[in-house]
Length: 358
Image: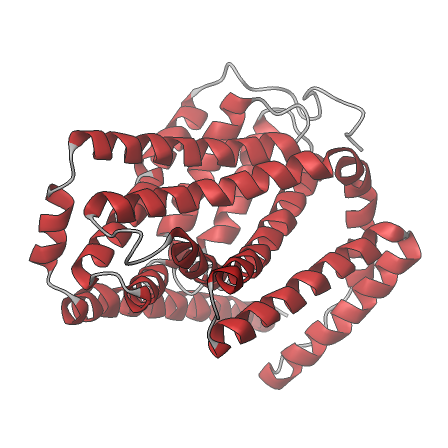
């Protein structure tokens, strides 16, 4: 038994190291090879320096608002959670996700620890994370569909865009149907869990991994825990999730306009389409926070739409500085505050209860 555990531990460590090396290699390739091939760093810097203080101020305000919308999603999915607690938990977990390979899982663990210290049970935390994650993926799938529809109204979209949009429509419809089946009845949820377990087991088989177990129990538990919250707040959660994604797009659009990429070069609909499809890439955790991957997708897409290469690169770097880099020091400060602050602490299970708490 000990030999098996040791081998398993070595395997996990090896995968972690390989993931970190792949992430580092990709980031280095993007910033030291791709960007210099695409445009000069001096041209990018000149474009950034040309912005006025008014333009910089509006960008910062938009970035702050974007960060605030993340808190609204957490408050919507966690009855009893206060904005100040949502701010600390969100910023700290985001900082981890943006800096550590596989940081998404570590960020989730940190959220559990923080919410537990404030008196929230594991079940309430699970409901919040599950529902916010599902709605976030709905938005990621839905935005390309919206962008494609707007492009179709603007003119004849390319075959590639139509294919990608139809794929997005199919994925979104499938996701909504699966959620509806889970929430419809316990038996339906169990059948969905069994089907998903069979698919997961088949995907693991070529890699020498064993079958998964208990997925039907997990989906039934998910239904029991979330049905009251979803029935009562689905519209509220949907609205704040959409607002959060569009607020992130607003930062990108302002960055484009402020560095000099005009609407005649890249319309807001074209920018939305590129943004939407770039956001889909973040669903695959190749690098922390999509670092490198998102930059390549945005720069190539916006330049292909008609934007000047140097100006587009400058806008994307400003956008990522405000939405990827800025949360890192804020998250570090939030984590230190949580460790030292004891006045918010509550005994386990003593967080405020509402009718939506299972």
